Length: 397
Image (cartoon, rainbow, N blue to C red; front, side, top):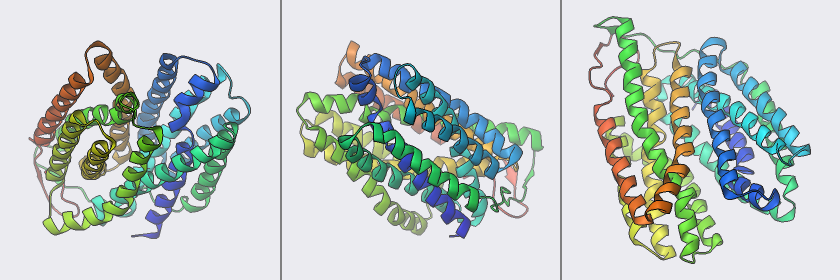
């Protein structure tokens, strides 16, 4: 891998490690330390996610206009300012204000990081996005574990630890990313129907694919919300539930390189890779819907992790391939914003279904969402016709 990609991988790991100090504990802090209801905590997290959606779209467009380096520095600066404020003022209502600012700032960073990863290793294809994905999960595993230890000593130190990690991320970006070119290195293909029609069809294809991608995230996030609550109701300890996510992160870090080798050997297309992933997701939720012991949920989590290793890195890769030259950042912004939208809508939909009906009804609806995702994955690239001249093959994937 190029040195520039290694710098992006390290930066992403540090970035996510910092944010993972706080996000798993947000609800606990708002409810137990600020004395607010779980509904209020849900609203705060929704506002944070909503700001992140806006940041993703803005950050993607900004990447195309001013480049990755400046976009990332701006996003880190906004987030770091909010974290410094949160370190000194973490009461109510300033907590909600800083959470919104942090959501917007971090949202700017992610599409630029993904777009730069694709740009610096164009010949690597999906491997560049797989590497960033592994770095994210390494950050989640390390940050969540360290965050629990710090919070056990003093919850107030969580904000300081998060701030220190972002300062380190800023230093990595300032000294490591300035020389990284944001150019995609793509050579244009001649479109049979004209560039304007092609660009419109490629954008439509991405939006269709991302519809299913968002539905997958709506279902996936139930493991952090409704399923988490359900495990407590059936007397699975919080320690055991936390262990599920530790295993999730460890499997991704260890298993993604193995999966990459298998997919390369099988020469699987990105479409087949995503379809396999959705199918594995369905199996995971069928298992989770029928089990009532920790070992059953452990099996379901392992299956879920395998499924996400197929899907999550593939969609940014497809977006990079679909993006016209000079629009890579905007397309990555769409991918990140739809994922965030799924994480924002999922807890609300899941909570309503469980409150009005039952967990069984929730699992049935979630499997229905996966079936819709299969359809969108099957049809998203229909009608995209290009004639390749040189460089990267564009269109069908």
